[in-house]
Image 1 (cartoon, helix red, strand yellow):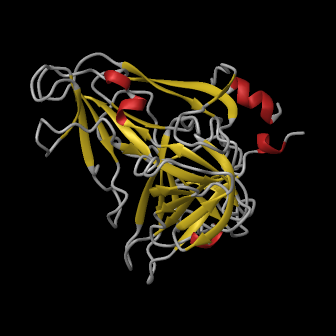
Image 2: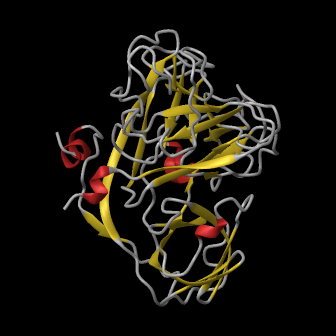
Image 3: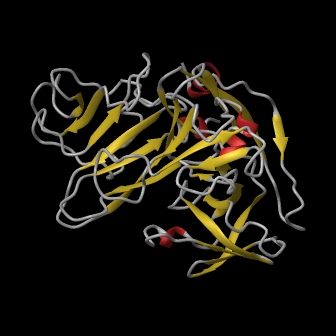
Length: 367
């Protein structure tokens, strides 16, 4: 089965046609068309469902970089309204050595945008002639519009919670960093998303859900629902930084694959990217890929399987192995599933380091 067939059959993406986006945020430039799909997953009652967002929102600009000065990027054929993209949009690189990398936009003026370089890792990929898109972030209210896909609460006691992972703390088995509920009452300013620990009058409808991350839909009570991701198929590589944040401390990354089709362990190029460390000893992993069996209801899920890459010569030689069952090479296991979350656990090191995992899907190179 070729990649094009996989995109139709496995993703459960319903191709809705080709659409464009032309919002009144710029006076020149280009907005693009692309394949639109729908991914849906059931979320069970009294359970956690770990989900992700492989499809992105319609882009509002596509062009190329003219020049870069630190975090300030000048774009060709662009004339933006001042502050048009501040805070809720990101710059996605569609070509060049950093293809698939993205940067939050913090300021907009004329033909320039200012981006957040984070730790500065990968900033060197922002160079002239690179093709880019400007894309709005997913938010709570665009993923779950008016509480769709969750059980709304008529009080400030949750029926369904949406939990976001902790991406800023060092360590493993990290508790969620924030918890949200959809309030459907008339008090405290009316309906909208609320965050635990904040005043009930403060709404979080525009809470950003970053690309490549996962989130948890937790039904404390009420019926199961359906999680949906309706959006555009990304037309560039998937790319994410993997590393440690503190010396001598292993690090968990709660992720979702930004591609809408199953990917095997070998097909992920995770080890070949240099971002995933190999083990020379069977069943003594260095880095680990942790996946979750979500067939049965459960809260506070723990990984059901751990995979690692073995670089030695025993039991058939190098390849992916399942922890606890090292006798079989698992290269063909399609453990990366559309809209499902997973965890990559980076081993501790004396010095915190990060490397980029970039995966270019085969369907982008079809004739």
